[in-house]
Amino acid sequence: MVTVTVGPKAGALAAGSGGLRDAEFAEFFRAEHKKLIRFVIAIGASGDEAAEIAQVTFFKAFEGWDAIRAPRAWIRRVAVNELTAARQAARRETPRATLPDAPVPVSTALAVELTQEARQVLAALQALPPRQRQVMAWIIDGFGAAEIARELAVSPESVRQSHAKARKNLTRFYGRRKQR
Amino acid sequence: MIRRLRDASGGETGVQATDAAVGRGMADVLAALDNVIDDDAALGRIYAGLGENAPCAPPGRGAAAARRRLAVGSVAAVAAVLAAGAVALATVGVPAAGPRGTERPAVNTAYVVRRVDSALSAADPGAIAQMTVTTHAAATSGHRAAQATAEEWSYGDRWRSVTYSAGHLRYDEGSSAASVDTVVSYPTRRWARQRESGRPAALAPGAGGCKPVAAALPLLFQPGLPAGGLSASWLPSTVAKDLRAAVSCGSLASAGTQRVDGIEAIKLTSSPDSMIPETIWVSPGTYLPVRVVIRPVPGTPGPTQSANITWLEPTAQNLANLSVPVPTGFRRVPLAEAAASVSQATRVWTRL
Image (tube, rainbow over the protein chains, first blue to last red):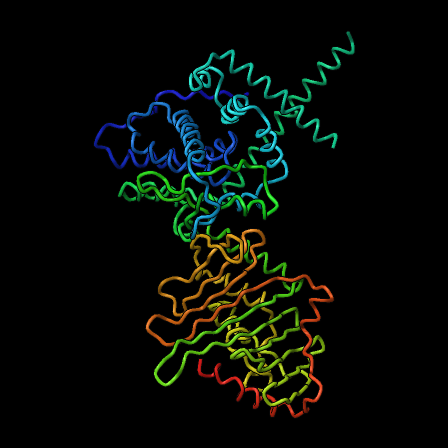
């Protein structure tokens, strides 16, 4: 498994260098925007929900950009919090079936663009227990056990165990698929 | 012992294969997102939410990319995903709007148009387009408000149009596969039949394919008769072809979704400076147009015209709708005479 540990932001900009700061944020946004949407989908969100949460997360990232030291991990941590908050809010509110004049939905577009293999992987991830799914989402995005452990506030050993269980469960899932 | 080793080895191979499948699948998810998400538009919305201008896009992401941006939304897709036969993505409620004025992320405008184009391409000539066309003219000085309705069917070279006015059947006309045109005038109880007089068509030869939807659908919005002034030299066309030409023009932009006949349809509208304000709603499941509305230019007294479109399988029952029945007791006349009587009977259209 590839491990990418994100350290302090390279070339952190001095106050007042707004143009450079914007350019740096834009570069980061373009590199990570879709990956963050994929990450949020992997931990259990719909395509629309993931796009929405990514937007909110990057908005917050831009606001606090100068103080964020490990932005790749930071946006994922915030996105998980946003998803949790959205679900808690949804449980409190009466769900609305439709919104008038809502813009074009991402999920609909994804529904026709995703390959069979992608659908299968997403279905397999959805079948995992939440902790295993979360660990898998971080690992898919190239994070190592130590970094994931920090973000999830657990021990690296616990991350490794969750990863091992997730791989076993996924393998079982694929085995069942093959038998059908 | 050997068995245990084999099991272990087999298990490890299985896990490795799973790792590879997960890697490929998630790479595919990213590729799919690449097709439907426009990063630059999403970034622009973040800056817009903060009242700042987005920095310039890097080289290669210039005007072409900017042209294909549109807003994208959040929640309402769940039903649409199911309708599209779709994916095992989780479905839970989502807040309706982002915090502090952030707007929705972005999806590729060109994507929607591309899907509509290929859906219409597949529907021509595979499906029958059945339409209910309503034309409504507001009251003006000297004229009362008027409304006329027509039922239309288009399938390959075949088409049929049945017009009602004030609740009465006015005329029924159509062209068969053998290019035989039939016109029945109900007010005068006359009918006519003639070979190859030509059906009204959207695009004149050499005129190019890019026209407003209104111009692309004269059959819908300017009903005419084979001998009633329409040139037989016009190219035969189909509703699917004509809509395809209109949608592919690039003059329409996505304006979100709206509920149309129980589905959360994707809305495409003409630009504000368009000469003809028109809107098309397409199904999120099939990407086929389900409704077209053309409004008068603001400040002008023209009619509002709308067409609800259903795409039907060419079953024997549905194909029967393309035949023009001639009621018993009606008198057969030369086509020109029947056309004249029909024109008389459908003045509402000429006023419109």
